[in-house]
Length: 508
Image 1 (cartoon, rainbow, N blue to C red):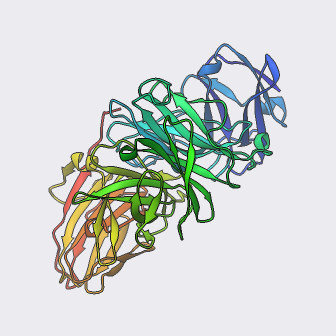
Image 2 (tube, rainbow, N blue to C red):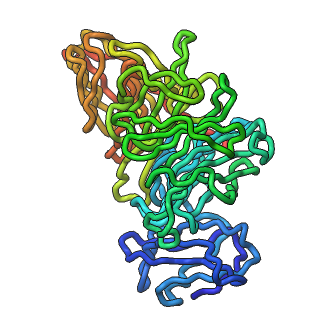
Image 3 (cartoon, rainbow, N blue to C red):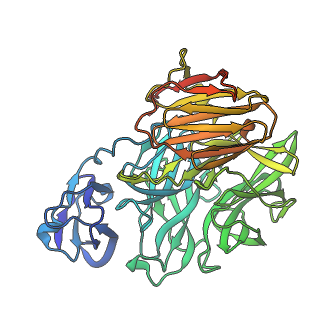
């Protein structure tokens, strides 16, 4: 056991990938029965060099004495140290797609805008490895949705459970009573999972509140919702103006979901149980307008969605469930609340990032739209407008080793068109409306002009076709983005394109 007099901002815990996991616990020296933190860490032993140090914020404990316990000798445990700043992040991360500084990241959580326009992003986070593990909430912020500043770990596992997914809400009206513009974060406390501290618990829905712009999140006592189904999770809160109430979508089990209403963001009453084929976990429910007509979209983790109507109590689907994505890489997308004039969605990209000290990347925020096609109502995904405000054209069409966007319209009679670029190739059969991009099969309307947007950012590509009808990310396995793309028709004739670099930002 180590005695730690906390005098700096962070406790740095060494991580060694592949090492045996050790259970580290922190207690208050004033009350040895009061556990403060519990971590499972692949801890370096026998003089091994750590792959990185996980930074545990300690500002709230400065001036206190804590006890660190682990089933390893104190001389090895003493590799834990203090610092005033987080360690330098791993190099090579994308520049306009958020990725963690170290560790594992999955679902986006708690998306919210501050009153000054700053975007806050939280996410499922395991700071001690590059695989899914004991879940925390990590944090980041941005002023332009392109350039993100990583923040501290925002929520830690506790005696009730690990920190599973949830959402954020800026309470401009002070409905909950924490103050105007307080940030409310709804999360699932996942008891009964892998953490020894909460092994006997169950899944419940809880609340954390921030009154400092999302820098610190304070857990509130008690439950918002008790356990309604074994692994019920992923609350998503929004406001329904016509009926004057706050609403929540919650995943229950299998293909089952529930909807709730509240007058004050605190007390919730269930209004609907619904089953939607193909859909499970991470629900979202939001309106989209087409020529003045309002439709509601019920969304789930894999990108399956249902379009219908919502009266503030019940959602009624009006057509079969459809799929929004071109492949299975994106997952668990969530929308920002209170976005004026648009619906803005962020997905987690399940990219392996082999050989790096982090796993997981967030997609560029996408603006969602709704159109009628030959089947019914269909979602469209477009890169957020902030991207186009940050572009600078490359006159010679030469791609730099920096984020870039290639735009073109492929003629309907181009035959078997081919786009070759640093890191990959896209083949499009314009007659058949099919093609391929890496391991992704393409589908688009045949024998029609085809709009194409390709965004490149280090390890990530995002391809958008047919005015947002097809969107798919892919991994870049090349070590560089620099080079000269070539776009040709089936007969070898060049097809014009525009290449722009995404300029850096000093917003943060």
